[in-house]
Image (tube, rainbow, N blue to C red; front, top):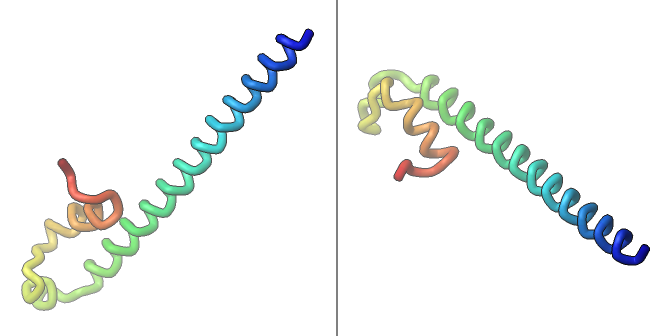
Length: 74
């Protein structure tokens, strides 16, 4: 009976860890998507002249926002 109880406790702990990790990953992805959306919104609000001064073309906005949220691609 002790082996069954220990096995169940270990299984519960493993499940709890996986669930906690999944929740943390979802929260992290949600925060990154918010950074992406905010970056796109702010860059789209700039005039073409402002973007030119920064050396940014409008076609670069999505890539820059992705890099801001998830880091540079490898």
